Amino acid sequence: MKRVLVSGGSGFLGSHLCEKLLNEGNEVLCVDNLFTGRKDNIHHLLDHKNFEFMRHDITFPLYVEVDEIYNLACPASPIHYQFDPVQTIKTSVLGAINMLGLAKRLKVKILQASTSEIYGDPEVHPQPENYKGCVNTIGIRACYDEGKRCAETLFFDYNRQHKLTIKVMRIFNTYGPRMHPNDGRVVSNFIIQALMGRDITIFGTGQQTRSFCYVDDNIEGMYKLMNSRDGFAGPVNIGNPCEFTMLDLAEKIIDLTGSNSKLVFMPLPQDDPMQRKPCIELAKKELNWEPKINIDEGLIKTVSYFERILSKNKIIIND
Ligand code: NAD
Ligand code: UDP
Ligand code: UDP
Image (cartoon, rainbow, N blue to C red; front, side, top):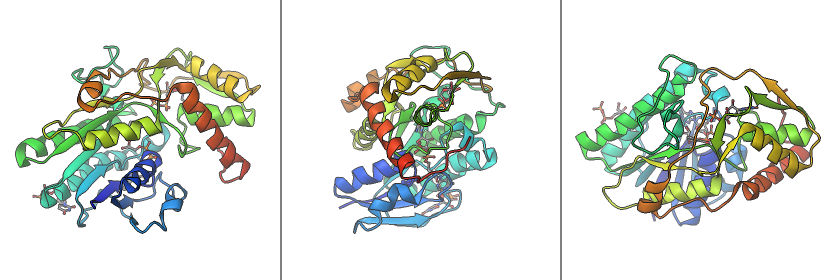
């Protein structure tokens, strides 16, 4: 039995990963400072004999004994990562150094949850892993994008300099149950607005595109990457290449929920990428992975989740 550390384990993706790892017969040490993560996300795991939660901020050193590390700690939505940008970049950079230092001392494999944001506002479409990106170093998204870019650099330097086994995953927009209801991401915003009969907020013209991957597909890809052949470090894109404009997405969600919400147009945030779509040829070849859940199926599951938590009055939705 392996003891696996998941930093950011009580967040959206982290909580699904903890479940998957427990189901595969591992012990899980979930390390999280609960900045955007919630105890509710892991409530059902707290009594599991192989699950342990530790409240800790990874910008500080961590001395534990584990056999494998998934480094997911970092707020992922623009509202959350721009709330305290200095802490965001510290989490990516100091957090990576501490997790890599831990992996180096223990001589264990470590996976980094990187992001499509390292491509910035891409001039190449779809984005293959060898595209180097177009990021504004001084914009409001840079604390996240540049922090994640620096973390990738650290991972590859620890790999070259200290012979550490690393796996780097570039995650494209992922959605599903346990997304934070107030994190302002487009899928959760549109679903909650549609369910509550509020106006659907389209930023800009709504012609910008994103490619949305359902959480179960993401976690399968993450697990396959961690267990991929020795010598394969990535970086590898994990996302669903089905691309939609934000207007398409709003229409889909209105249809699925039978909502009578209206669209309202609001200013486009600074540096908002115009288009994004992963090239997933490398993931297909190296991991034998591709997404299985289409957008309609994934949205139906996500809508049911938000219906459930709204009906239980378990959350307060910001205006
Ligand atoms: P999330 O905000 O739900 O989860 C992040 C978790 O990290 C939270 O539980 C939070 O409390 C914790 N955390 C933040 N700072 C920390 C710190 N300093 N120390 C310890 N814990 C800390 O976000 P998510 O969507 O689950 O994202 C998980 C990872 O995947 C992140 O690294 C994110 O950058 C990456 N990612 C996610 C997406 C996506 O679409 N969800 C896309 C690209 C990359
Ligand atoms: N570190 C940690 N846990 C460990 C080992 C290291 O948190 O089990 C941290 C430690 O604080 C250090 C960082 O990881 O600053 C980087 O470790 P490394 O060994 O690469 O660097 P050094 O200790 O030589 O600065
Ligand atoms: N967006 C929108 N309305 C919202 C929230 C987001 O039109 O209520 C847009 C946002 O401007 C961006 C896209 O949806 O173009 C995806 O935003 P999200 O924050 O989910 O992810 P990211 O920009 O990090 O890809």
